[in-house]
Every structure is written in C-alpha cells, then in structure tokens.
Amino acid sequence: MRLGVLTSGGDAPGMNAVLHSFVRAGLGRDHEILGIEQGYKGLLEGRVRTFKQQDVDDISRRGGTILGSARSAVFPTEEGQEAGLAKVKELGLDGLLVIGGNGSLTGAHKLGTRDPDAGFQVVGLPASIDNDIGHCGLAIGVDTAVNTIVEACDRIADTAQAHHRAFIVEVMGRDCGYLAMRSGIAVEADAILFAERNRPEDEIVAHLRKVMQRSFAPDRDKKRVLIIKAEGVKVPTANIVKRLQEHLDEDAPGVDIRETILGHVVRGGSPSATDRVISQRLGLASVFAFEAGAHDVMLGWDAPKDVGQATKDPSIRAIALDEMLAETDRLLGGESPITQRRVKLLSTVEELLAL
Image (cartoon, rainbow, N blue to C red; front, side):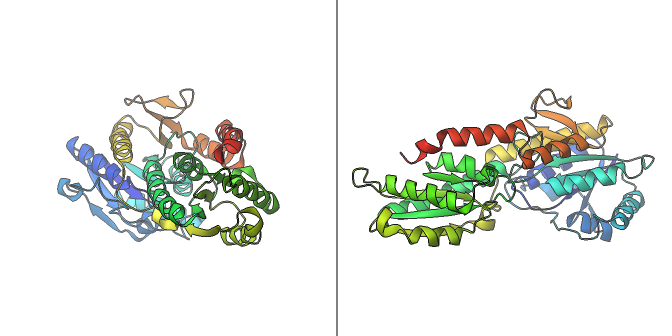
C-alpha cells in the first residue's frame, strides 16, 4: 500500500514515536510511506517526502514532531477539503494516517467521508496533551505533560516552602481540566481549579481564602500553599492573585502569594516511557488497521470495551470517527459520564486537600 502520514494541530510528546513505529512496521511489511510536512497545510501545498528506515532512527525520544505541524485556515472550508481530497488522489494514497487532536481528527473524518468513491482509507490517532478526546483513556502526550507539571510544581514547592509563600500555578487545559486534576493530586496541591466546575469568580476567591486561612493558621504551621489552575478557568490567574493579596493581612499574615503560568513548557520535552510505548503500539496498530481495510476510524488507547471494535492489540480499539467526535462533544460539554465522574471525585476530596 501507499500510505501517507501527517501530524496536525498542537504537537504532543510521542508523535515521533508513532512515526518511528509506523514507518518501521510499514516499510518492513512492504508498504510505501509518505510523510506529509506541516499537517493539512502541507497536504494542500504538496509538501511530501518518502520515508526510509534511517529517517526514523532514534526519534522516539524526541519531543515535537519531525514532520512539523501547522493550523490551516483553508482546509476546514469546503474548498480546502476538496483541494485536500484532490491532493490525496494526486499522490495516489491508499491510506492517510492523521495524528492529532479534536480539530485534526474532525478534518480526518471530513476528508475521509467527502467522497465515498474516493477509494482511500483514513485512520486517526489521538494526540492531545489535554486528554480531551472521546473514547480514549489516555491520548498521546498526556503522561509526559503531567510529569512535566509535577516536576515544575515540585521545584516551585521547594522555593515556596523556603519563603513561606503561596503559589498559583496555571497549566494547559483550555476545555478539559484533566492535567490540572491529575497533576494537582500528584503534587499534593491544596486546591485544584478546573473549568468543568463552572465556578464564578467570587466563589473561587472565597474558597481559596478558606484554603489560605486553614493552611497558614498558627496551629497548622504549614510552610507553603500550592494551587493548580487549568487555563480553561475563565477568571485570569492575575485577578485571583490580586484579590487574594487584598486579604493576606487578615487570612495569612506574613505570607506572600505569586503566580506561575507554565504555558507551552508543558507541551515540550522528551516523551515519557509510557508515552513512547503507547505511541509505538498505536503506530504498529495503524499499519495493521490499514491492511484490514479500516476506514474513518480512530484507534483509541484504553477505550471502553463496549465501544468500537477490538484490534490485535488488547489495549487498542477501533472507533468510528463520528462516534468519537460525538463523545468528545459530550466530554467537553459535561454530559459524558467520564467528565461527571472526574468532577464528582474532585468535589469529594476538595475539602481534604488543604488539611
């Protein structure tokens, strides 16, 4: 088969590990593998290279993506998708592997279903550090991002303890607070703020004032307070800090409060062992999926057992892209049982965090 692969949207640690496995396995099974640079933008521009085995040597340990990534303003349009389909036909692709997040997989679904007689297959892989993709227990890049946050917060906690300070650390997670939730528990945060709670600003400030009062009470003698905030919380971090500072003399005399926004630091870096293994297994499963005739599906890691179809890998299921996209909408909208379970869990333990 003549198979193309592109990485699209936000980069995620582990994308290169997918490429390593997909290219090695594909070439080893006598397929031709074409790498499309800069995502859908590169597809429209015809930026294509033929992979050789040596092109993917020693790349699993590298962050980012050797193919590059870009967001295209043209591809989401009707004209852009028609041009993309024409380019796929021009390249003679039997299949296209799309590695990316919600927007990238939406593009894969539209491209793959635009012409039922096009005669090529589309398979998607979930790569999003926010872990905001439906029917996917763990997306590519999530484990590395969590570990990066934990390492940064451990360092911040050291200096916070030394200077008797409180820190609000903002992490990525525009529509999904998974990173804040998971890392917050791991670093023993005193409070975790995430968008799914939909708390108004006054309620957030009131809650954090109680955290400060309890943590820095004379009989508690706590040395630091660490608050993890997802970027999806609509109240700016600076506003929260400013409002808490207005009450410090009353709530925590002698204590200072600072903010740290980790931003894109969370996205970069070498992938963890977990992300490398997940990515490599997904890359191999993609080759098998194309050979089995799979089309318009996403391969989900640790997906629910009652969703999609089993694959040769017991941890991977093939899920129709339209069903995945529908579940993603439920996940981000709060209707998914997974989102509700996460919020319930954090609400249950919230009062225990600052003890």
